[in-house]
Length: 215
Length: 336
Image (cartoon, rainbow over all chains, first blue to last red; front, side, top):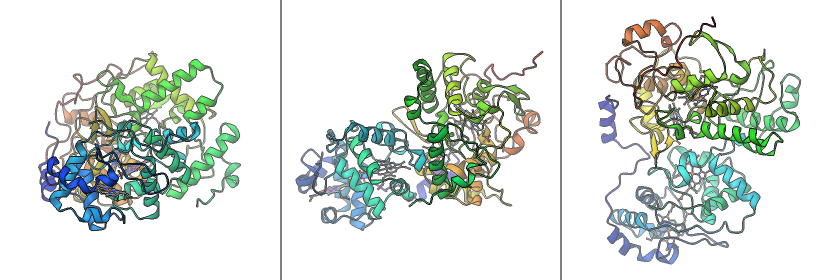
């Protein structure tokens, strides 16, 4: 059966929808070279670090290359704001953005930190939000967008399982505050704004204890 | 912060099942729903917010019963575990019945447990809960229902029935949030506008060509049309049902964000695409249309020229992934 109308193919090729990032092919080897300035924070193996008393450095290892490239471009353009990250994103050419994205996407992620000391009730609440949502507040489960095991779905929905709790918390709060608003169609912002501080803490703690995607 | 919904004012007229806990839960949901723009219950409506899986664990029902209800829940939210056996597309029951089949305005499934057995126009005889569930397997899942009385069928029915806990049988009041209430149909429907809106607001998840997204063989985003979708006999092929579903539930997390016109235009766009054959197909699309037009297809685009391709919609033998047309549950009953 022919399901795809020709017009759709034409549209897809002519103009990329807003969420699709026109990715250049990246060279992981060149990316590794360009990433020498990144290791101070994101670590040599790309697994980042949870910093309980300061800004956490996200784990980049194993994230989707197109997602990573979009984030770096968004820092460069000011679509995504962060004072720490902006100067480093600005150092990269468009080609280097593609290269480092390709490089980090190939690294093996390790277990996130920051959820080790969470109590059972907090983890149970976090698991519920991530796996089933809380429809009393119209909080759709994280996994319905972030995919099975919250390990990511396509290039638009990054893996969040095994990410550092401090970073997850910071991002959800950034969406609430309106300082992160580079998500397609406000899809993430809508959900984040329905969450309480306790919800955010709980889901961040639980997700950090889950296995990250292993490519 | 949330405005508190004036539930006390309504308490006299609402039929609330299950005591104080259910009362609080209902209040929470109604606050959220009205804040999102859903209508508040009317004076004469029956309001029921089903129990949650935590309520199940906390209850003192027989452990075996709990286990079976849990199994029903698991089948409802991960129906893909029956792929190739009972399910032949990418859907889970919860792909259309959001919030585990519990949400008002997302065709919550519990009403079937308290309004059936009853006569159904779609098949012209009296149906019970199992037959209603079998209907969604046959059409929405493009599948073959589990045997009546089988473990899986019983578990699914038990889940539906437990969701209805505390509601009277054959209620006379109309049910708040039942089905996918359609917004008013605008005068003109625009295929072009529907296509544009779909690509802008839906394709990020359901993909440009409607095939959705699967990751590691699990459905993340179901397919609104094509081989992985429901077949031509499913309720959602009626344009008004699709418009009602979309308006009240999509984009995911942002219900009621589309105007009535937009919801209808997108529904019309989707309705112009192909999908697996109606299991009631007689071998001829015109004849099938004549037979099932009056009760069903007068609301769909089945048998009409597609605005996408110009070809007659449903004029094919494609049954999708399954190798049969009609499961043997699709048959008349006479009670004679």
